[in-house]
Image 1 (cartoon, one colour):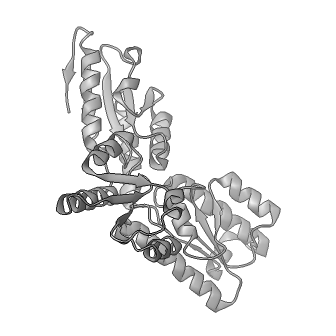
Image 2 (cartoon, rainbow, N blue to C red):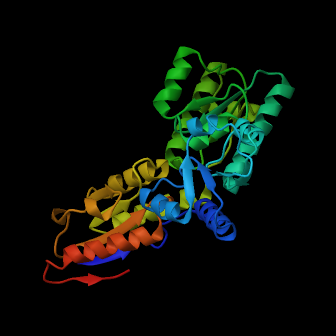
Image 3 (cartoon, rainbow, N blue to C red):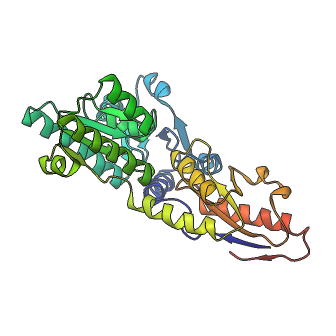
Length: 319
């Protein structure tokens, strides 16, 4: 049996940046509290490691109960926040360490610019965000403007069209949460384009020439390329152990992609969930994870698989 850790798995650039800044702050300011508004990463093992360094995770209810944050520091995680959160934190006296991912910041700015265009043109334009309902990044995007419509699936978009919640004869600009599936986003955009063309009684080519639909490519390049690489990784291994927190949006997308490519894919959060019956003596095992999965955890899972493999007559670990 062989075990290989995917060299492309592990934290994305935005998460690495946020964690490095949190660690840097705690090292430079011993004794000071650093509060993260929401989990800095959707991984319990990494959160526990950071907690031991002095990072405290709070939620929006906790923030609303603060009467005076003077002398305290609040970290805005890579997912980003709406402007209202910054105003609230500053009014309470918090110092802010803004770790919003640069890719998310660009997306927020693009949505505000689209809203300004719609307002200036006076055509009643609409903004659609393809994102996970309730996800921190999506909430931050929604808060940039008034009246943005969020759809999580093609079925949800179809329902909004059928219910008349979308005016297909008005200009529309559509954006995606940075960690959504590129193929799903493409399907959603294609449906929207065809529906808008049909509503105007023209073919798709003629509709495109009208410029009434602006499709923004806002999925993170690192996430998009990782999907292609991960499909190849899953296809070239007998068993895939996918490691991520169950709350990770990116983890859900990537683990599902692995499962579609390789039926022997198992989604776990920790080594405690590994089962010996998943493996065979001659398996080529692949270990991979989400953008919220630390590299040290992937390496630890590989070591645990090695221990399971010792029951077999032939075993070699390749990392």
